[in-house]
Amino acid sequence: MAWCEGVEETRILIAPDHGVKENVTGCFLSLRHPKSGNPTCFLYVNEMLEEIHWFKQSYSSWFLGDYVAEDGRLYSATPVDPVFIFLPIFEEARMKKGDDLGKFRQLDDIMFINGYPGYLHLLPLAEKFMQVVCEVKEVGSSRFFRLDDSKVLAWLYHKVCQLKRTLCTLDKNYAAREEKETLCDAVSILGEYLKDQPWLKLLCDHLKLNFAEATRKASDSERAPTSIENNFDSISQDKSGSRSGSGAKNTRNGKQAKKPKVETESRNIKDMFSKAAKRKR
Figure 1 (cartoon, helix red, strand yellow):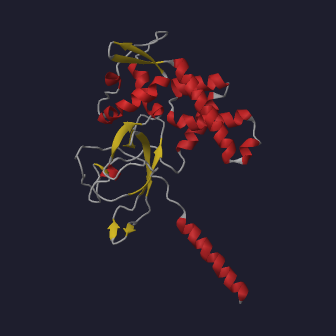
Figure 2 (cartoon, helix red, strand yellow):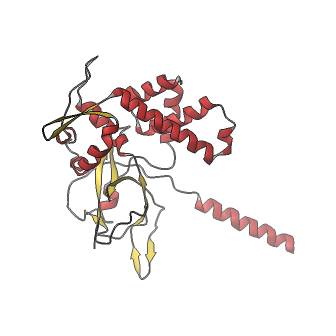
Figure 3 (tube, one colour):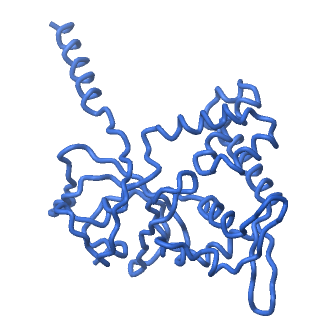
C-alpha cells in the first residue's frame, strides 16, 4: 500500500504526527520555491503543507524488520506557513503597476500556474490563510482576492517578532546581543523564503535595518547543510530510475544536504579508547 500518492516503495520519513487514520494518504506536490522560484517538493497531508528535505550517505539502505529498503535516504518533512508559498503567486496575480493597487482575482485564476498543477490541491489552504494578507471582496457567491501591501508588512513584522522571541530562548547569547543584531538575524531567516524585492526590502526599511547585510546573511543561510530545493524524482523514482505511481514527467534538479561527518567522529572515538588503553598499561 502506498504511504503517499505516487510512491509505492517504502521510505523513511521523519514528520510531525498528523493524527490521521491509516487509510488517509498525503500527496507530494511540486511547487515553486518562494525565494528562488525553482521547483521544490512539498508534502500535503491533513490540510498541512510541509517542505521535504533529505540526505543520503554512500551505499546506504534501511533494515526494517525482515525487509530491506534499498533507498537509504533519510527524508524529513518540516511544516511551513502556506502564506510564504502563496505570496509570490498572489503578487504576480494582482498585476500591480506603479501606484496602481492591482486587480482583484478569484482564487481559481490565481492558483492556476502552468506546469504546476499542485497548486490546485491547495485552494482550501489559500482561501483560509491568505485572508490575513489580502483584501477580499464578495460579489454574490464569488470571492475576489487582492494582495494588500500594508497587511503583508504587518504579517511579516509579526513573524519577525515571533522569531526574535524564539531565538532568545534557544540561545542565551542572543539575550546579551543588541536588539538590532537579533532583528537582523530574524529577518535573514525569513529572507530564505522571501524575494528581495519587494518584501525583504520593505521589511528592512520598516525595521530600519541594513538591507545589504540582511540579504548577505540570507544568502549564507542558503548554503547551510539542510537543503531548501529538493529533487522530487528522488522520492518518486526507484533505483533504476523508473517512476512509480502516476508516471508524470519531472526533470528538476535538487540539492542534497551535506553528508554528516560520521566517519571522522567514529575515528575520534576510536582514538580516545586507544589512548585510554595505553594509559592503563
